[in-house]
Length: 479
Ligand code: SAM
Ligand code: SF4
Image (cartoon, rainbow, N blue to C red):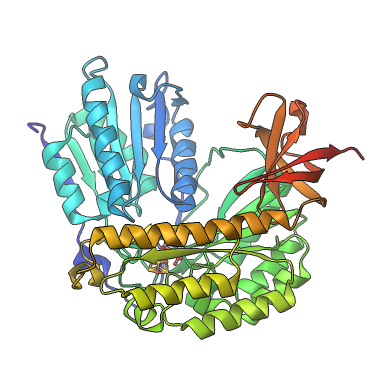
């Protein structure tokens, strides 16, 4: 592209690997008054891809944009500012984003003043940023550690007409006090920590998200208390490995302690994601047993059931250790619903090793799983591992795994047939006219007959009359 470039900083995967014992900077968000009306009379649209962490980041960016005068648009292609908050966990996540960038290129012809920004995980990759700069018509490129600089970056892009690139490959910071526009009025994301220090050999996240860093417990508790005051019913605590909460703070205060404290805030429902099996401790399991607000549901990614593959993945637990935690959890929270993540076709995975995964899926009695074919990510150790399993074999394994997992989904719903479940109502159901839907305490999608929109955000009782693989159907129980 012919545009000049304000090349503030480019990503470096080498720098992103470094973990120093430096303290973590907490940035108190403050808006420079010179940007106060930057977006006045203008519209924005944010495309969000990937995990809940990205959804939470988009809510912060929306808050920052609205604080400088932008209003949300319904039509991305007619907006004055379009941001793509990206994911690069697997190759197909990136392929979608190249597609949207291509579409935007055409639409800019009708709207030449439109600013296009790309942010989130993709710009943290050296090769992706190079490709964006060289091949796409993008004005602003920034990463995961500097979303608070958004007003400055927009200002530079508007007034210099240059391509602005600011991607920091450091260990990251903690942003407090930034405005947020939350997507929903009854369920909220609450970040409790950022980054990841696990370095699973297939995963790009520790390079794109920086080191593991926990927010101060007071900030988290105050945020949840505020949400209770605003009428929120459910929070989902977010982090790549929430079970490691507090380790970096060097205090005698862990994730289990945080659950007990949050239970006292008056919030009715607490969920959390994601858990690393190695760090899931007894206190957390006891908090799940003791706190009514902590939902009887857990996403506990296992990745593989084979000990050799787990070792090469650097997961730091064995099949047997994983099952011991599952069994302890079921002892303390007998009706818990467990879900997981599984990767098939990791480099060198044999048929026997894959079958160990199938065995574990049966033993753990999962009620759902996200299943993936291994996707090589440049910069990770697994990228360079010899991978001679044919694609057709990987697809066949994935299909067999999905068939088994689907049996678990259905079994998980069947156990509620004839029972009354508590549902937090999200809205009208896409399953047909006159139906509404929400999630039960065990995170089961539940549809029921009603067109009473005033129920949105409320907890209702539903008697389950029919179950399918992906959802349950029932009748509203009037009090
Ligand atoms: N921190 C969480 C954990 O450890 O489970 C989730 C991280 S990641 C956003 C979500 C899932 O993507 C992982 O659990 C893993 O199954 C999958 N994943 C990560 N890297 C992958 C890769 N290179 N290929 C295929 N799947 C991958
Ligand atoms: Fe990736 Fe492993 Fe960290 Fe999860 S725990 S984000 S899979 S490195």
